[in-house]
Length: 204
Ligand SMILES: [Zn+2]
Ligand SMILES: [Zn+2]
Image (cartoon, rainbow, N blue to C red):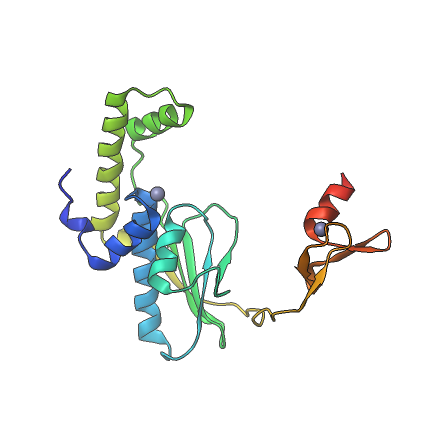
């Protein structure tokens, strides 16, 4: 399939490579990451560390990691499991930042697309249906890429105090499995210090 112009930006290609495919969720993640970063560029000092808070761990989260440079490994990506297309970018020091959320009704419901998605999930879509789904999936992704920002997102300034960066703690051994575990993550049970995995098993 011919790659649409909407997907040709270098930074979008990076997101698609990282994520593994082009999809509407990735497109939303791309758009709100760009929006949030533009806002920050205009409103904050460049040298402050930025922290991203995402409210979905679906496709869009990958675009956030590629574009904002906030990642789980660096500890500057916070995941809140709210199931919403919302990205907040904050300065760690001041706690000032921006919240970008998908507008109610920004994207029209596409019955056929949703129906086919359900069929594919259940594993009973035909090849023709899979092909049609891909077509609609890309069309929707393109729609997200092409929509005017103000029709897609609500943007507001926010302030949220963030906890200081987690310190790296020396490891201690779990008294049950013997695996080295960050000492602050061990919990006491029956006179033993257990890792969370063993603690949970014991509790059952
Ligand atoms: Zn995806
Ligand atoms: Zn253990």
